[in-house]
Amino acid sequence: MAGLNLNDDAPMDVIPEEPVKPPAAIEKLIEEAKATLIAQENGEKRSLSMVVVGHVDAGKSTMMGRLLYELGRMDEKKRVANERGSAKVGKSSFSWAWELDGTQEERERGITMDIALQTLNTPHRVITILDAPGHRDFIPNMISGASQADSALLVVDAAVGEFEAGFERGGQTREHLLLVRSLGVTQVIVAVNKLDQVEWSKSRYDEICNLLKPFLAQSGFHPTKTQFVPVAAMEGINLSQPPPAASPLHSWYKGPTLVDLLDALEPPTRDINAPLRFPISNVFKGATSGIAVSGRVCGGIIVPGERLRIVPGDESAVVKAIDSDGDSLPWAGAGSNVNVTLTGVDPISLNVGSVLCREGQTVPLVSSFTAKIIVFDIQIPITAGTSVELFHHSRDVPASISRLISVLDRSNGSVIKNKPRVLTKNMSAEVEVSLRSSTYSGPASRALPIPLEPFSVNKEMGRILIRRGGETIGAGVVLELLT
Ligand SMILES: Nc1nc2c(ncn2[C@@H]2O[C@H](COP(=O)(O)OP(=O)(O)OP(=O)(O)O)[C@@H](O)[C@H]2O)c(=O)[nH]1
Image 1 (cartoon, rainbow, N blue to C red):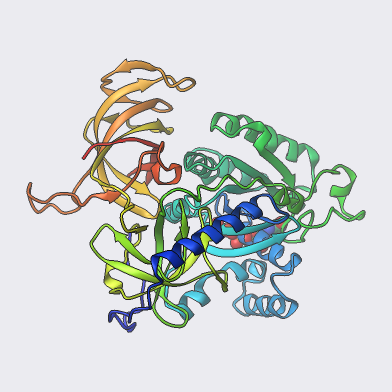
Image 2 (image 1 turned 180 degrees about the vertical axis):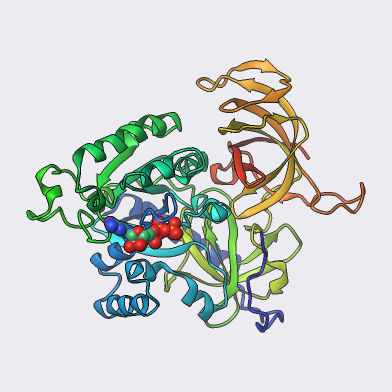
């Protein structure tokens, strides 16, 4: 995946260094941050992130645009501007989705953003929304979004034929659900959208829920953490307000609105005491000065004024500022999705997939490891030596399944067979993964190691996805680092 996403004309000089805070001041700030975070965990308004997934055109961006408006994050002026803008280019039906369309921002800031980041405020939650692209060509971007999420909103299109297209073989509904679960997301809300297209039929809604429920359970989502809600995003029915008496939905649905369900999402426990891990998912020009990186804090706390190591490599950078959705932050703890402005660093040493760490607590670099994986619904079996693409956070690298160690029982993890010859669909297995060199410049060229940790040490740093020829063939967790 691309590293620096700067404009060609952007200055590439080393950015002057910001004064570094003395260690005692850093420690004090971290202690304050910890105390505040613990208070927040027990407080009124808790924060979490949510990736919005689903088959292409299910209505994800429309739903998010409309929610931003209904929850006061988009004003009337903006709504009218979006309506006019979309009508002008003959795309009126996309007026709500316009808000999430990153192109304008991309042009202004000179960055490539594939995941639109927004914040929704519900009565008891602050939710960072990662609106992922639905098209199958953009699955790597979707993986990057899902690897930063605590929960997922799956949007499905209720229209006859459309739900089926997304759910059948090759549709993104199944693949997205499997991917988000494999990346550690345990809570999902399923919004059954476009009910206006099926005359608000209760039986169609029930049919869709009944098709999805067994699949969700099979994919590892616990039924108590799976919620369904009927909606029509375009008309704004059952998003933040219950269906009005005049709506046909009112006659048969008395359950929670989408916002009620969002408000009840459970934020996970944050590992604020772990060593700092900040995998970089994007690099761009800072709003005022310096260079900025975005990503998710996957352990510990990041504070301004500290010099951090950039792993891999010997470079370091000073944290100048931290912000989220335009608001400047005094620090950011595990589980936060933020932008970090850096100084005292040559932008060339910042790459997507690199990890910011504290000196003395750097993340290990590895080029081979063992992993426990679940094999997806594949046609061609996996054999020892199969070439794959390894996805870890926003990084993808060439790798191979170098050894098939054992086949495991899916329900209890016990070994069924040692040294299998092949792995076929739906199997669980322990394998060895080795990075490959991306060039063919002879046997001397070695693959560059990547930052990784066992799942037992840091859950978010220990999850991987495996793809082959544009198809996700497996996902799992890192067991042991080898070389
Ligand atoms: N009839 C009807 N159309 C809707 C509804 N919600 C969205 N749409 C339409 O569905 C189309 C796709 O909507 P988007 O919001 O762009 O879908 P998306 O899932 O974000 O699409 P990708 O990001 O490309 O995957 C647009 O033409 C919307 O107007 C709805 O509730 N009813």
